[in-house]
Amino acid sequence: MSQSERYVAWVQRGGLGTVFTALLGAIFLPAGWYASGRPLPFSILLLVPIGATAGFAIGKVIGTFVVQGSGEAAQAFTMPARTGFYANEHSEIDTLEVRGDFKAAVAAWEAVAIAEPDNPWPLVRSAELYARELGEPALAVERFRLARSLPDVKPELQRYASQKIIDLLLGPLGEKGRAMVELRMLVDKHPTSREADGAREALRNLKAELPNVP
Image 1 (cartoon, rainbow, N blue to C red):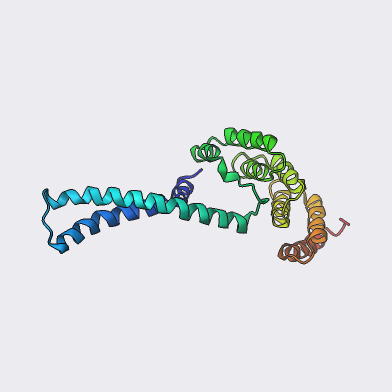
Image 2: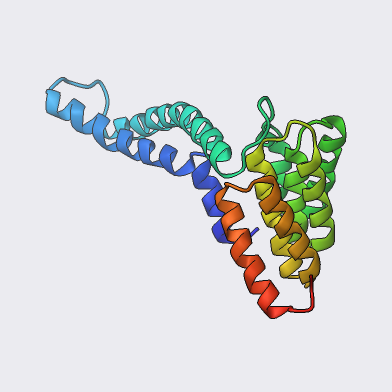
């Protein structure tokens, strides 16, 4: 994971908000007390660390609830999972990813997939690591297919997995014929979706490029 990705992950976990509330506490507690005119038994400068500590604690509590809620909302919008499953419950695996230990993270996600055979999320997470970090597009395709094929998987996740498979087939794997098969499946299974519209356009372009492919 790059330095910028680590920074984004820190911000998403509420780090930036916590620092901000600590700064506000360090400024406003001394300023407020000074404005009140009330005497202090110690130097007013001591209110700076007290305010910072209080602000940090408040920001931590607020950030926990806000970030958790926004994370679940983002997951539901971008990569919906089955009701009752949420891959980010496994924070120890996220820590492996942040440290850049992607092989261990993949192994951990696949262990979760075995322990939770009806949950598509561990397969999706391992597939993304295979594709993005480990340079194993064939294994990524296999994991995305497994996730897509599980019972009761939401249509949104099926479409997401199909799109990732198509991208890998057209990109690093260079298998345009198989990509066309996946595109047709996407159109057949989800004909009214936005993804199907894009699949139809991609099929037209591929047919023009590969006229001998049925």
